[in-house]
Image 1: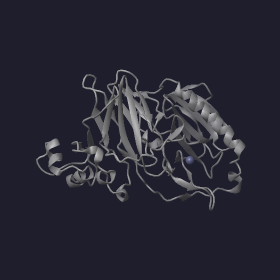
Image 2: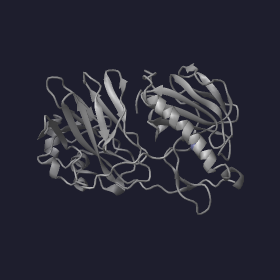
Image 3: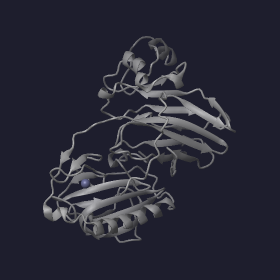
Image 4: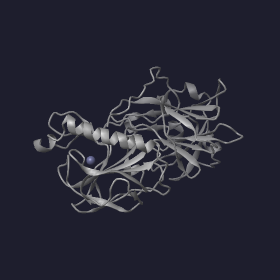
Length: 371
Ligand SMILES: [Zn+2]
């Protein structure tokens, strides 16, 4: 799938991860921004204070801590900085070399005391990390843009949720999210940070490589684009957490950079490859409607399920199907069986979770309603 064009911020203004600007009725004002942070293994109060450019005393006061003791899983309130919009990113974020896991820091703010609308999302993310924008207490469906392009909202209980764009292979950059509820617009900033990973060699035989013709690519691209387009107007079909389509180990993770032949171009892996023998049952990751079930040259035996709210799950390389287009399927229902069809060098299930046609990390959906 082509990656939708992303408008990059030419201004490249440096924002603090806690900067939040409210634009209401044409007036611009700086809202009191407060964020929270969940203590991870290895964290110290000193390191957290340094990371958010706040003093230890301010952290202790905001969290009524008597000393420096914190525990893993504890949620700390990060007090506002005195001049957040002027703080360079480099001073508020951990050094790039130390970032090897997605940050779980959230922006949480109340912008309207009467309705208590909250906006929360990760402040920083690495390529391949699913980023959900959550809007709480909004009476109406919000509108939102991600660097100028419209997001599609679904529901998690009473919270509106949209997933941002995947940015595999792109350099670090700031992302601007603008959420509009009624007459109020809330602008916030998050940043894509570098996470260089080695390129994996997954060399394919000439026979397998020969399936990558323009005709095959275009046929499958058009088929998938139609499915993704349809899913935008389908109502959200699921309410329960997502589950693995088959319980197994991963043999190639989402977002892995790969080369399919010596000296070839780098491709990104848009799914999770799960180990499985030919004939192993594949189950629907959640409730939805089957929109594709057929054999294709590259994706092999392919099933696609439209879950609504612009979300489609895809299951490649199957040997056999047990569902057909138009079938309503339930979470956990068998939809087909593992095979080694299409662009593969052995049997496995390639599982994708796409939002608006954009790939997201399937692992980050498992056990959750939204990632
Ligand atoms: Zn794969």
